[in-house]
Amino acid sequence: MSNNILLVILGLIVTMLFISSSKKRLIRIQEQRACFNKIVNEFKIACEELNGYTKDFYYTYFMKEKWKNKYKELYSKVDKKWKYEKLKLDKDILNSIDEFKNKYSNIEKIRDDYNKKFIRIEKINYKNLFDNIEGRALDQQQRECVIKEEINNLVIAGAGTGKTTTIVGKIKYLLEKYNYNSDEILVLSFTNASASEMAERVKKETGKNMDVMTFHKLGKEIIAEVEGKQPSIT
Image (tube, rainbow, N blue to C red):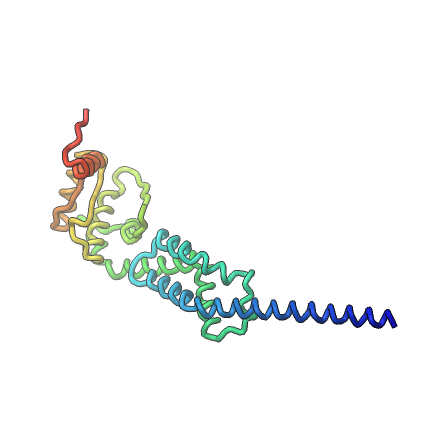
């Protein structure tokens, strides 16, 4: 008899623990579902923002990293720790999550594929410009250098290979494609002689006067603007 009572008590305890565990699990699922319902627009906004980076201009490394860092926390909500597929979310919410997750995890390929296509199209659209920079046609590498819009571009080339011509082409491309004003472009060089030569060549090719100076002169002008007078350099 006592053994039967003990078994009944144990059965009740197990049942209560199961019910308690089930309730906690249900509450957790409800909380997670509510969380996704609340932030669904964030997934849509993130995807729309990324789509905006792939429209008629070069998609830079800086923009890619900025987007990734901005939505890093959002991505953490849909990694393997959050089994959102089991939350019985609405189909449109699941679609938004899946689209964002796919874009975030494949952002490098998305950027690379888009930029390759963009460069190919720009070479076609601006063929006439690239075919006549200072009376010569730019080669394919020079055209890519002109089109790429990274914050920092390192171009390694020997003497007489057309570096200055490429810079002139870059300036002409920026003026034509993005409609920059000449006072929005600053060209820097290491020597006064090369700066003077660059200014003359840019003026001849574009018909516009542009700020072309040495790094030394730029530093002096910045100091003078901040201090209100030219620095005394000995």
